Image (cartoon, rainbow, N blue to C red; front, side, top):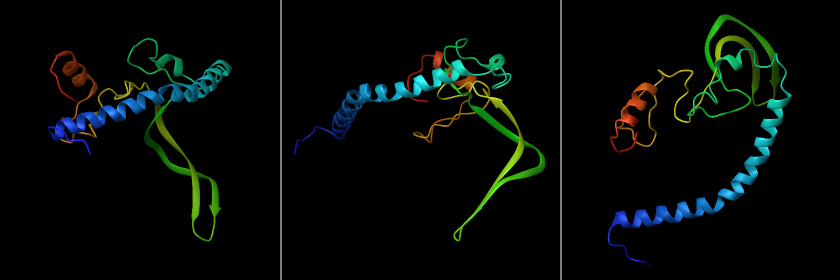
Length: 153
């Protein structure tokens, strides 16, 4: 067993090993993802004008460099509009009954950046890795990012 000068030295070397393995697997991942990218590209080319009505007017991909280009569009689901709901399907077994309902809700198309969604820039992001970090919305994060202060979000 190899001895390390400190625990920090040990964790750095272990992290480096894991990152090396991940980097070696990237070509395989890219090859697998290329099949999905080709499918999404074909779906985008085959879309009809009535598909995703209003999407082109709110899509920020290509207009804002932080927005991830994606297709089909992501939805952000809001509040239910009315209390009425319509049963679509009911499946019963001896263990469970599953009911699928159709409800009317507010929605909008998303503009994801990875950490934030620019369709809802006021929504705060919370780090799952550092629970002591402050919650920031997109504007606060951009200000923090451009301030030059080092450290994690």
